[in-house]
Image 1: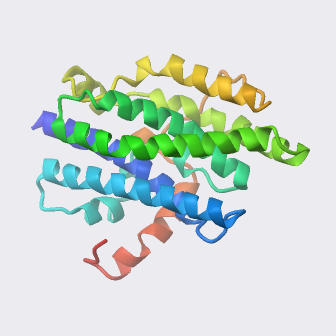
Image 2: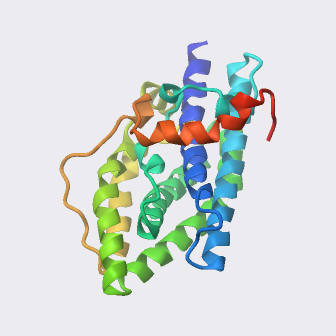
Length: 252
């Protein structure tokens, strides 16, 4: 029973990252700087929603309380979401959007690459299905980081500002909850602590290539993985959950 609870919480944490980031990207549909970029951002959002659905379907099965993916996605309270704070940060400007996306994409691809080896066949299968999509996400956001950083004075300023502020949320990607530790011990979860050095090395190389200064920060902001979110999360859920709460039993 304890193992099932840890597995459920582990899956929820992964799913919530994809769902909340997808919701943030979905806010920009029709507002991209170019048509091509707008469509690409919307498609990335749809990719993430598809991945979230796979996780929620499995989480509902593990929980075994008669709930559906819709219940898990739309009918939980704010403190029941376990996404990292990074993905819920607002779309201040295009530099923020791409900075947030890239900082998450690098981690996401590393994470899925490791999850291919999970002893849980369902999680390994979800990783195998999503890894090609996330490879594209990282290439797309990384290319934009370089274009903005090595572009105009204004674009360089904006992306530098975004990276400086968003950097504070990156360390939480490697935080481990009780469920994370339990699943790592079972050979099911990914030991993210082993990804940390490689992550910062890869991100730093690209930032320098893009003429962006790598932030030097000793203190980081955390809490999302424990259900303690930023002020932005309530607004996200108000919009995302409106239809399901107003018209119960709707389905995706």
